[in-house]
Length: 40
Image (cartoon, rainbow, N blue to C red; front, side, top):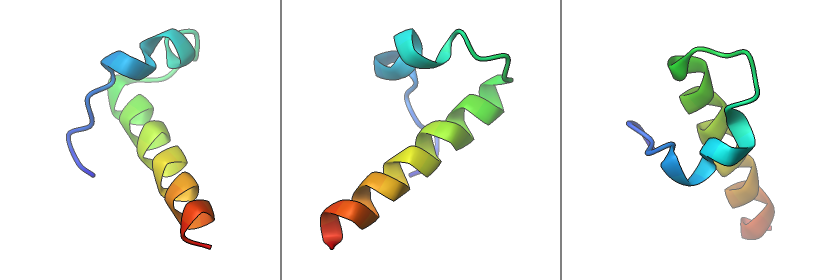
């Protein structure tokens, strides 16, 4: 899931002191965790 569109997640992540790249990595990591939980 590269080049993540952050717009739907902005209200949740804009308060974090992260670069745009770090915000993308955060959203991708959360997405991957959610996918693993749902796969179980």
